[in-house]
Length: 359
Image 1 (cartoon, helix red, strand yellow):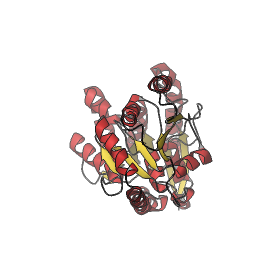
Image 2: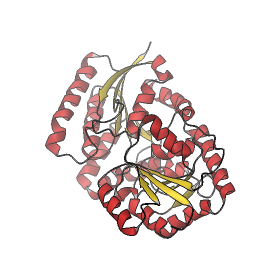
Image 3: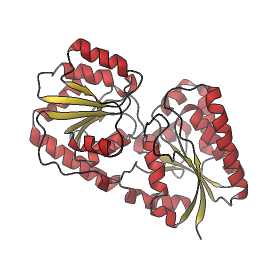
Image 4: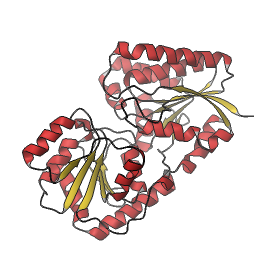
């Protein structure tokens, strides 16, 4: 007999403002996977209208509707397990309330925190930290995006290993083209994501300023709070021929952009486990990132990619040169990145793990 799973997460193809996130892919791919042979999914969609900051009142009514729907199903739909994928802040507290209601009704409860900013929230607000602790204690299992997150929750909240289950982020590797016949000339470097200070966009620009005479083009695909400021900065620094601003790209266009890139760079200050990095590795692209969140579970620096400390512009510059100065090295690291994803981050690799949690 199939299990009835109340699944609270993001199930749209994209947000109202066109943005697409890793949580959308994660939730949709689970629902469309072979897990559905064993599960009846009861879906509560929590896709935000926008990733921009919203007031508490703007969030309140949709949250009340989602919580009310969840309570209805918990009471009348014979739910076996409550599973929620959540971000930070109000989102965590809303999903956490659903977890606590499920716990009160003696349901199995699974929570999957998926935001690098959650650490900042916990460390900056003791009241919030206590609420998080209460929610995690009411969770049967906590899905961790890697060893970093397992260690963080274990040490911060004194949780047992039995609660903490590592399930790496996953991707449909077959949707990407891992065959690269040659390195582009000029070399194509790609940044894909929110154009914000947190993503290290200015660190990246300051790094390439130091090597602007090298043979490369930097493509920036995304948008965000700093987009217009970045545009003005590139004009001021005379980097318009070196840097191309592409705005957001979606679907096949995004895959083609990743597939034709030679180097992918994500110099973030905070991350959970970024899907964009896994996508780049899946397409046989050499990668550079910062050693934050779950990224060190993906990249073994000096083996299948390069890790630098966030904000270290000199190290970021040297990482780019590490590839630009040796084409064979770039190809070798890209192949090892692809091999890592194939072995650890496919949907098939995680289905069994989820099945064990919900069975």
